[in-house]
Length: 187
Ligand code: NB4
Ligand code: NI
Image (cartoon, rainbow, N blue to C red; front, side, top):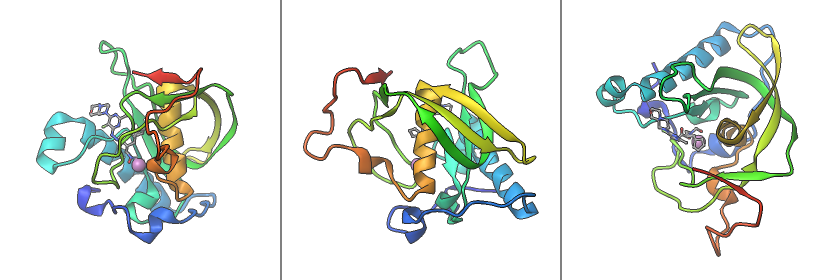
């Protein structure tokens, strides 16, 4: 089981490297890692388990964060509708790639946090509002999906990890809350 002790923090070299693609059929190791990463997110979103295991809440986790330099990420975006228990988006993504994106940009109104960064870094992280994503699932099936707003931002945060990029790399140092016109602020 993955816990906070398995998550490496900024300063560790793996977080700044470009991760390697996985090959298909997936090895048992790559399948197991994907499952464990999703289990971490599920536990982190379960108030009881998160408390017991002392987990920070997470909606995404990328393999480099557990010191594995492979292009694997788990995403679990809960539904925004409190009456639905169907997640907004849930999957383990192998070799994900953004095929195209909107001109429109978006950012989280609260800024972003990262399980590999033990401090608050304030500021807007401006990303693409909508993306067309291609990835392979654990069964090796090719998926092509469109995501917008919150789930699109989460996936872009995770893809950054696969390329050695951390969220604060995108924050304007001089004016962390500077925003160009037309950027959608996700509340
Ligand atoms: C990834 C996110 C940072 C910004 C937005 C948010 C949380 C993360 C990092 C975009 C992607 C992890 C991976 C949350 C959280 C809302 C949903 C459901 C119930 C608690 C949970 C809290 F925890 N970010 N943390 N940060 N990362 N929303 N929520 N809630 O997930 O570093 O690379 O459980
Ligand atoms: Ni992160």
